[in-house]
Image (cartoon, rainbow over all chains, first blue to last red; front, side, top):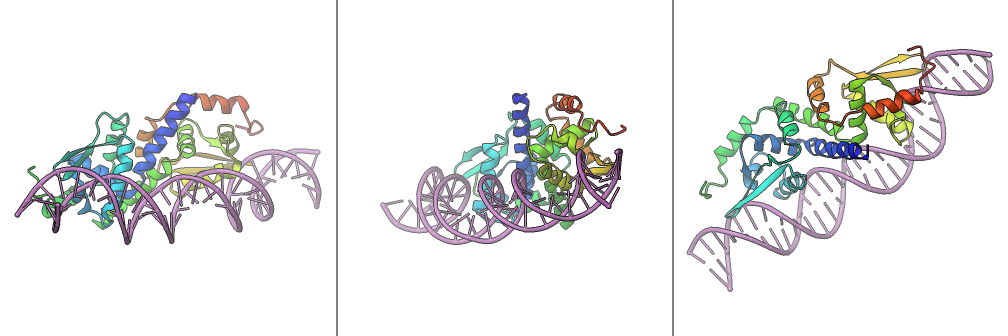
Length: 115
Length: 115
DNA sequence: GACTTATATAAGCATTTAATTATATACTGA
DNA sequence: TCAGTATATAATTAAATGCTTATATAAGTC
């Protein structure tokens, strides 16, 4: 019972993280394509620290993983997360991100990266 | 595109509502069984106004419907909600509420109701 | 090493949130 | 009509949240 209560709290914590439009959009984009911070910045009007802080929260919750490549840090969904399956399901209900991904690829801010 | 952005905001708003352990538990219970406020109060340690305020938020978002029967107001999930299907899916990932429902039925606080 | 770009962290601030207490409303039954 | 029970609302407050600006760290280039 305390175990279940804990799980409920943890699940609520994850849903609360998804309950922010910026974070939810970040996750929806990363569901389609890994991105570095400067790529995500093309999508939102908020500042770079704001994006970094959202990514930090998602990473701290185990939902994201990061990988540095040169100057760039690439973020992607973390399939090992206990909540990966729930996350995928929720993201299937979320508006399509093709427009935002187009925006990223058009701007191509990380062009000097070898990828 | 503004349409999609709106939908994203609205979806995030719903997820944020689910991102509170009390509200998430309320929804999980109501997924199994309609309840009146005094029944829900058996489950949580918080005050009656706290429960009422959570119910209000969920109702304002269209996730719940209420029906008065005598002194009691019964709450249940609102199947007409645009988010009912998402909600059901998420609730399938949430810890089982049998223990809490047992607690409600044992206490039977609305016993004088004809139901 | 100096300069630039990418990202992270820290500090401060305004807003939002969830709880509490007090009070109001709605219904029931004597 | 009065008393009791169930629920809602209002006002207040403390805590959490998300943003901004400023600064730090890390890597790349010359």
